Amino acid sequence: MTSLITRLGAYKWTLIYIAIIPLVNWSFTWAPNFTLMAGWSFNPVTVVTGLVLVVRDFAQREIGHRVLFAMAVALVLTVWLAGPQLALASGAAFAIAELVDWAIFTFTKWPLSRRVFVSSLIAAPIDSVAFLYGANFLRAGSFTLANVIMSIAGKMVGAVVVAWVVWRAERRKS
Image 1 (cartoon, one colour):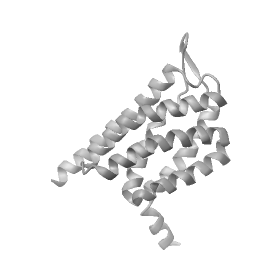
Image 2 (cartoon, one colour; image 1 turned 180 degrees about the vertical axis):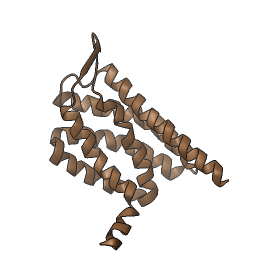
Image 3 (cartoon, rainbow, N blue to C red; image 1 turned 90 degrees about the vertical axis):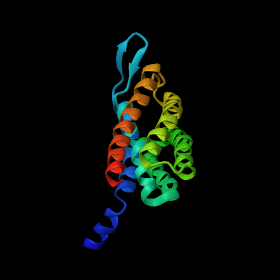
């Protein structure tokens, strides 16, 4: 049992990544929309979606290109927890954004801190628009400017914090 826990510990970011995707998607199905002002409603789950892209960056460091397999596992779990419609919206958004992230992580030799920031800067708007557009077919009122802005902001806050922490660690090593 101890050796299994030790082996799983080597994949902690990958396991968190696989768990967080269906959790966020499931939360999106029940979390209430709040109206800020006329025409400006948002779902609070959009703020925490940034964790997914940032955790993916760390998962890719652990397992490389197999992160795409981890995404597929997470989407199967999403079908089970949140239904096939939301899994389709999530899968399409993740596929687009993840491929952007994957390309940046694969083809650049930038320090990790820069890759985390730049990949989130490019992928966050794409992921947010694609997911909320698809989710709007399942839950009307999801594709609003406020949700898009809050989703991108949540992703970028997470990305900035993680990039800064990683940047500090990189500076200490050099």
